[in-house]
Image 1: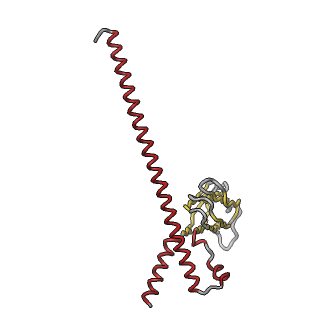
Image 2: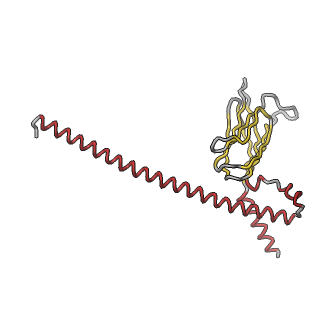
Image 3: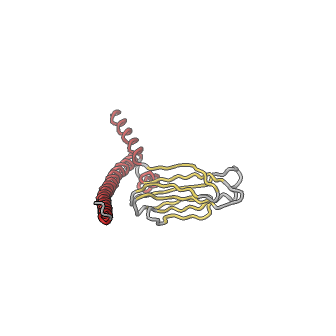
Length: 214
């Protein structure tokens, strides 16, 4: 029984490691500049983000110069979140498109320039789900909650494998199309070169015949 429990815990940790997409990072943005963070997310996946500007002068309040504008867009340019001149904020939405989602932070221009440090926590997939509320709403115990988490992780891995397979097929199709176009262009280039060489030979022959050299 102990061995089985250890294996189950081990498998659960592996699933947690491979299935969760969590990006928690800290970076700097100079006033008048834009910094973008990209995340590849599949369609119909939940994604949440929280961000705030680090106060450089604790416990004093943030100065008015420390504000950013955030826009989150899909790979096709559709806007899913927009916040203008804020100290902090959050977003949550279910993706409708597959591909790279971009979160771009813009700091308004100031004289003299100001450098702001931003904390950004971005979660997608199973990691974006609020398991505390799931436990409260479902009135489940700890074991049931862990089983629910494990089921979600397995389902997420399953969906991720199919998603990667689809992307691989798309890349293979793109490679085949590119190779076909390159072969066609190579054949066309050879035909053009042979035609130009033939015209040059004909021109030289005509020239020498007019000069009665041949």
